Image (cartoon, rainbow, N blue to C red):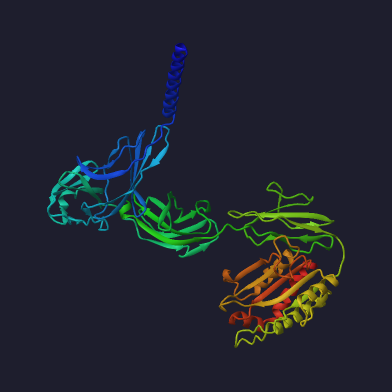
Length: 569
């Protein structure tokens, strides 16, 4: 029995020793960091020292000091007494100090607190002139000057001391004779009575001056889709370095050197975030003399990344004459169009469209378009069929009798004016041999769609004019169901041709384009009408637009009719 007790005790001791060994070994492999705090900032031996309580298993500490949420000082130290060499701020700056502890595995623990510290030392006023005038002493103003303190100043050219002196008042005077034989950057350093450097000021003598800059392009504020931005400027002479800064919400998010060609810089889209407002700063610098750099800035509002407009065709595919030349287009001007003629989906390895395609037989054309800094377009399919047919067009002018035009323009109601416009379109279509049907102005959309389908309309065109909440909008727009709708091509052709005669076409903001209703408009919804579009000719509540419609009904109607005729012939 006694032997069993002895053996059991030995085994227990072995187990406990093994447990302690395992625990110790695991602790060695993964030493956990202990909690710690920032205690104080004190002046010791010509330095400011940051004291933190030790963190168990810490191998190093990293300190970050911020002013107005911007990091102005960083340092790593193995000791929990961290010397803040060369920490400088401006008198009465409110600083926030944060400390991280690291173990040997580079795991991190933050201090339990942040430490707020007010920089009470005197400092040079930083917004004074950094250029020294010839034959004049340099006078440096000091903020927070304390007459009970004993300040001294030294001036350096590189590491060479050009001047030493005491500072007895809130202005330090450096004799011009002490610096006159030097050119470039000189540095003045201010010391307290302990000999600790508390402030630095750089100034320049006999230095090339960078010329004033002016922004030529873009005009600030500037809004754009997510895209490259071209920056053009004048001035900046003598600068041999240029830097761009991007700021959002008062935070600098990017800084990089750029290399202008003929005073022009391209800001790449890949450096910009979508739907973001930026302040862009361009700095022109001689050498690294940032204090006397010139700069210009502008506001840049970056929108979303857009999709390349789909490919539309110049002629109707459902019935076409043999030998017809087909042009492929995208409303995205710089788009590259890829296509196939064998029914397969096109890729970037497919044929590139350069010249019109001639249709000699039934063929399935598939297309898509790509352009820089945009998503690729949808794939559109056009099944061309060689056959003869008389085009059937259904015109559906607005029946909105209570939408009045702007007073004094001569525009009566939308119902009255759009029916008059439809009369013109109908006349030219019939003269071209088309079969034309009209809606009943006293009916409703369900009856119109049913009638359109009953007569087998090849194209259903609803004709309207527009209005805006503040009566300030202008322009043309045309609605289809989506980017792959059968009506894409004819609607885009109508829009492009009408835009050519619109009086506001010099202003891109009036180009409202082809819009997608995604099922919300009954007369273009492909569940109800197989090939429909709704055009908003212009804004009847805007004087310029209303006058254009009143005075040019014949021209507008003929233009719309000609677009339809050319599409089907």
